[in-house]
Image (cartoon, rainbow, N blue to C red; front, side, top):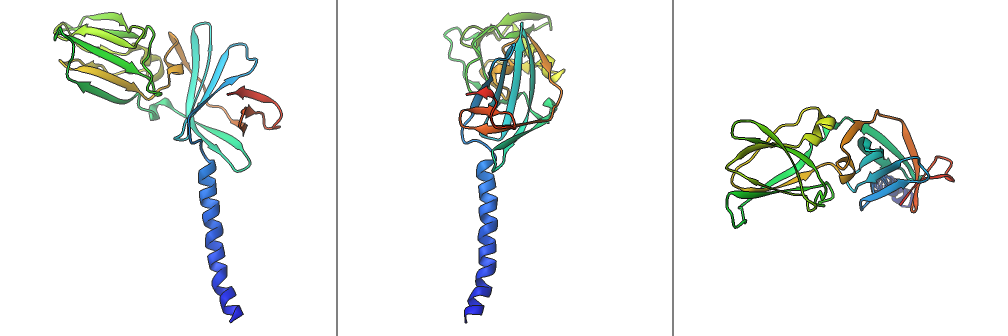
Length: 225
């Protein structure tokens, strides 16, 4: 009887062990909440964003230019975080574009609002080209709330020219009588500099701790929360 129970328990214990390994690994592979880390003592600003979907966004900016990269990260049980770099072609620039009924008193004026990946209004002078009915371009900028007000009878398309340095090609967005909210898949860090340079993929592994990201020796902190 004891041998029979032992024979039954072995596959059960094996199944439980596999489940613990599976779910333990899943629980440790990414963060529950998005966190942003800043480099310590770097010559220029450098930041890494780790989001709750397993994506990272790495940026270093200096003198008006920004070097950016992105990909997937994974945290192992021994708190080693590894970064796999992806091409930006694999990331759509927009999460969604929402059109809604125009609420301006002057029904010829629509509102276009830009939001970052963090759902924050892009409150700075984001450069946009709008094209009139004859196809002639004009440079305009958003206000401090990430808003742009234009006459939809005069302009028929807009182009977010700041995306060209990242995606090389940017499709124009049609303008109609509806106001728009444009939500980026890109974080604000990638959209605030006038010049953006794509960083080459690198081999990167760090040690993940509660207060920051460390070298593999586990003693030298490179990035702090």
